[in-house]
Structures are given as structure tokens and as C-alpha cells.
Amino acid sequence: MNTTLVLAGILGALAVGVVSPGPSFILIVRTAVARSRADGLAAAAGMGVGGVAFGALALLGMHALLTHLAWLYMLLKIAGGLYLLYLAWRLWQGAGRPLQAAGIEAGAEAADATPWRSFLLGLTTQLSNPKTAVVYGSIFAALLPAHPSTALYVALPPLIFLIETGWYALVALGFSSERPRAAYLRGKAWMDRLAGGLMGLLGLKLIYHALPEQAP
Image 1: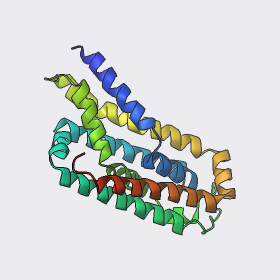
Image 2: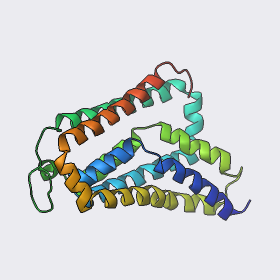
Image 3: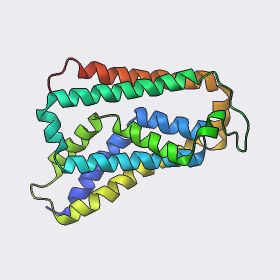
Image 4: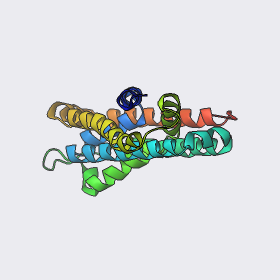
């Protein structure tokens, strides 16, 4: 099978999953708007590294492992759901705190934020959803040939990074511009509560779907 066609199919399928709204999208938007463009881009890079990690695990057979060890998959989903609930609580708790003007309207929370911390936040948020590992595994299982070439193994990780980071970098650039930031500053409290509520619902959904399942 032509390596280029295989890569195009895999990357196209992954791109559809990446642009679908979820906790990663919420986090990037909120980070870019409330902190800074640099923080949003750093968080996007964290998403990219997380995507590469899931891709590598899929190539190593993590999908098959989670399929056969239902209890492990359940625990990972519960842990991921709890992490999202923690992020939701943090957002809700800080919703009423005012942002203090500093430079380009950097918030009070940005005093404790650095691009490195935003990178780690993006990475941990990406890794908190074990369903992503199953998505990667399913795509690879469906589209990878039985005996992938070395070129595929070499090309996939950097291309996964470009797709994940590229999309979230576009989101960060768009939402860190002047108008979205001004809108956020005007409605910070309800926007933070909305983001926290959505994040909490996603966490509860992850836990809910984990508990009754016996297999992924």
C-alpha cells in the first residue's frame, strides 16, 4: 500500500477528531483569552506532545491492552473524569476574581502563570482523556497496513504533533486577539462559570460512561 495514501488517510481521520470540541478546546480558549497568547500557544504545544504520546501508545498496542483489560480502561476514565472535575472547580472558584490590568490586560492569575505551566496544563488535559488513546488505536488499527514501513513509524509522530499543535495554535491565536479578550473581560464571571460547567459535564460524562461498562 502506498505510504503517502496511508498517511493521508490517518492524518485526515485524526484531524477530524482534533477539531471536534471537547475539554482541550475549552482549555485552549480560556488560557489564550484569560492569560496570554504565549500561554495559549504553550498549551497548544502541550496538546501536541500529548497527541504524540497517544499516537506512540497506539503504535505500541495500547488500544489492544485497553480492550482486553476493561478494569484498567475504567480506572483511567474515572481518573480522567476526576481531573476534568478538578479543572472545572478551579474555573468556577476563580470566576468572581477580577482581572487586573497589566500590559495587555494580563489577569491576576497570569502572575502565577508561565508558558511552561500552561504547557503542562495542556499536556495533562490532553492525557486526562483515555478515550483519545482508543481513538488513535482504532484509526491505526483500521488504516495502518499489517506491516507498516519504517517511513510510517518515522513520519507519524511529527505529523501528529503538527496537526494537534497547529489546530490549537490557530484557536489560541484567534481567541487571544483584541476583540475576544475584550469580550472576556466584560463577562469574565459568567464565561468562566460556563467554561467550568462544560468542563465539569465532560468530566461527569467520562465517569458515568466508565462505571457501567465492562469493556471499552
